[in-house]
Amino acid sequence: MKNKLKLVGFIVCLIACFYFWSNQKNELPALVLDNIEALAYGEHGDRVKCYGDGSVDCDGDWVEMRITGLSLE
Amino acid sequence: MKHLLYILIGISCLSACTSSPDSHFSRYSDFTKTKALSAQVINLDTILFRYPFRVTVRDSVAVVMDLHNIDHYLHAFTYPEWKHIASFGKRGEAPKEMLSAANIQFNSLDSLWALDPNKMQITRWKISPSTGSAELVEEIKLDKKLVRSLDFHTMESGFLIPDYLGEHRFWEVDGNGKPIKSNGTIPSETANEETSRPALAQAWRSFMDYNPDNSVLAMATQLGESLEIYNLKDSTHKVLYGPAGEPEFKTGKDGSGVPNGIMGFSDIKVTNKYIYAVFQGIKFKDKLAAYQRGEQPEDGGRFIYVFDLQGNPVQKYTLDRAIYGIDINEETNTIVATEVKSDDPIIEFKI
Image (tube, rainbow over all chains, first blue to last red; front, side, top):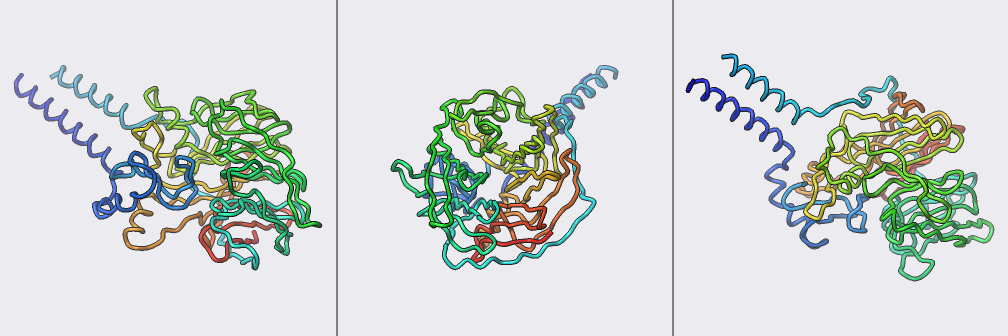
């Protein structure tokens, strides 16, 4: 019974790891992350940042990108 | 052993439910016909555009809407000569001035309609080529219930306007700016009860075009690759997903939708036979990577997808320029297009 429980635990961990990994794949490359703040600063406050001239609606402006935090969240 | 099997099946089902949403809308992947098109540059000697977002041609007049112009949002030209007639829709906070511009609709010389989302109003202008002027003839305040309107189209009576809060898909609005009927829902395959509706609506921000001759309304998402075709006459509705699928987004701390994934469609037009949609397909992370390399990322679409009115893919045009807004003339086989970050911002393609 103990062995079965271990096996179930192992499988659950495996699935959890896979699920976690699949949700992480949209993250930005580390190189890009280094400079996102520099790109985003100087625009519109610290929650959703509006960057560049473009066509994406952002707090009443048309911008190229909307960025939050350190990734394209 | 039996119990272990049940547990495994249970976990597998749970995992499947969380990671594989239903896919019940039609998919397109290939176009039977493809063709490369080369741009012909239009020489403009008078106007400096900052971000020419939309272009529309009616008979012998063309109007260009500049999203970021510091003086005037709207510019009229003779067509096909492209001689400047008038610049109007002055940027400013005074009465009769515009705070922003999102789209235009050119029905006749005395009916050039313009949507100002920041002022929440639609204005009607009369263009006079003979006197080289454009006059504001009507201002329609949009009802507060609409919150913020990012696109519109005139219909037989009133306007069609996308819903901003995500509870519906679009509104029929009367000639006084009052919403009179809501239609549809956002055709997401991944949204659930926990999804913030306003964030979903922002991610599903769509460009729309309506042809009163065949009652076809088409909507294309700015993010992702989703198209909707509504026939308002027989109340039928078709949703199409392209290879990039529905818009990807995250919900920001302020509850707004923050784009992820790709920039999708830039403009859409419905003619009597076909639906034309400009497609970009550029990933936001690739745009950021371009900045990282010190490069200016491309802004615009290098593809025009053509569908029939039932949503069947017909033709894919590959362009030698990245474009934004289009005007289609099937009689002369001409597409007039705007290129937003170019010294030659107005171009034509022969199809």
